[in-house]
Length: 100
Image 1 (tube, rainbow, N blue to C red):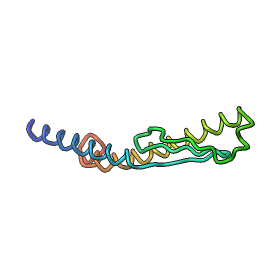
Image 2 (tube, rainbow, N blue to C red):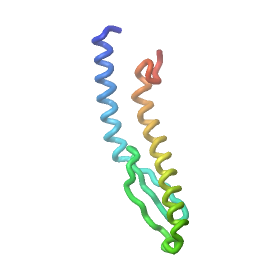
Image 3 (cartoon, helix red, strand yellow):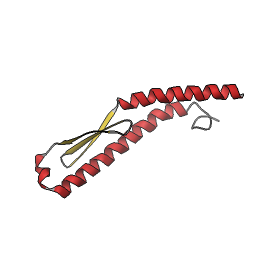
Image 4 (cartoon, one colour):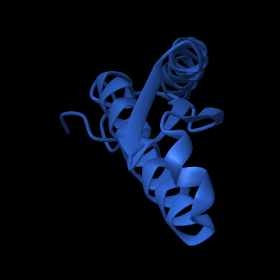
């Protein structure tokens, strides 16, 4: 493949990556832990933290652990969603996960 073909492929890759980035911004995943619910976008931005059980407010350490746990779990889910979406783009390009 010539230099022009490679540049065209890179342009396609960039265009597809931008499209997927927009899609990921609209995807929300969440995780719950001991009365706390955290929502994260597919771009791994935290969207919201909800206290589902007011009883947890009386235990600061438990609340902190719950927020941390829910955030970590939601972020991992968002990473998995993102990886799945990007796999479809990278799969078509040799050297980036696609056929050689």
